[in-house]
Length: 192
Image 1 (cartoon, rainbow, N blue to C red):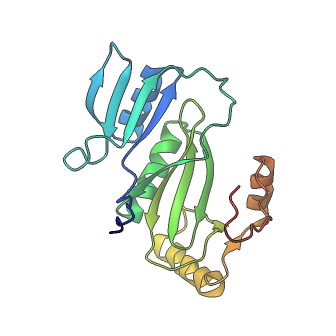
Image 2 (cartoon, rainbow, N blue to C red):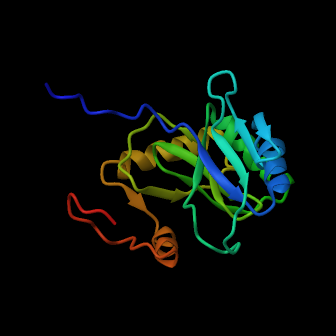
């Protein structure tokens, strides 16, 4: 008898080690609005969730980061929003609180605002558009454009480029700067 292959239902949570736990905790609760569900000060760990009634924790913050601030550990941590208006609201909140922004893009299937937490971890808030677009799909957008005009432009771009994917040259340059071979096409079955 063969055992069925196990499957993952979804990503449950991620844990981040911190240089300054209190600063990180303030950012994720006050700016992103996550709820503290549990903590143990003796162990230096805090559990946070956007959906505490459904998921006990989606983010764990822990003391003990022991690498330089400029070390590249995490490519990104993304938080899904239910509505485009939420992404726009976060963008405005980030501006009000001088949160360092990275990029604001359409992925065709989503619109995302990329930002850095106080310790330089790259994060994203995004909203799923419901459109189908081959990835990678990275097109910089002006999020302050009238929402209907912006969504119409995203739909038109997906209609033109969605089947093949799309990456702006500036994103290709960014990936190469990060040490990623952005133009490399890996053969099937090959891992980086």
